[in-house]
Amino acid sequence: MNALQLSIVTVLAALGVSCGRPVESAAAKEVEREAAPYVASEWQPDDPELARGREIYHQTCHLCHEHGEEGAPRIGRKEAWAPRVAQGTEVLVAHAIGGFTGSEGTMPARGGEDSYSDQDITAAVKFMAAASQREEP
Image (cartoon, rainbow, N blue to C red; front, side):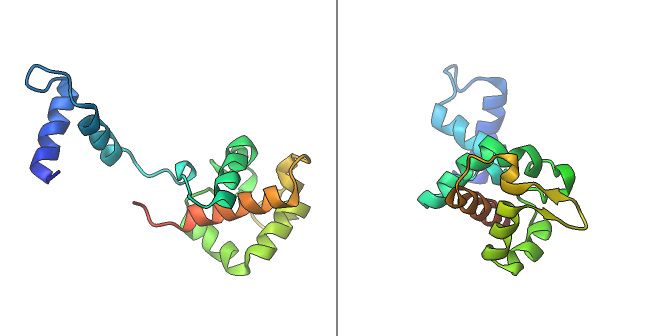
């Protein structure tokens, strides 16, 4: 869809019309997708481990990492994640599993949820790091 067509569809979608018929759902979805800001936590990875990490993120990790509670690096903030990612996955996972107190805040062991396995925590860490380093689509 070129820019002119997208502009027309956008206007028609806003008005709720398209030549007297409802706006085609595919066109409306394209307008919505292009207008919506990128949200790192909503990224749907193809890799099964990262997909599991996304589930865990939305179950527990988002409580701190979505808004930066207790100094947690916010998901999607490259500048906050870059120095952490540079330390390596092993360090990040060790901090997530065992807990960590740094200059910006505290990470409780296992995000305060003892039921997660080491593999679950690893998947969540990898998801957050990958989602935070992605280029916006």
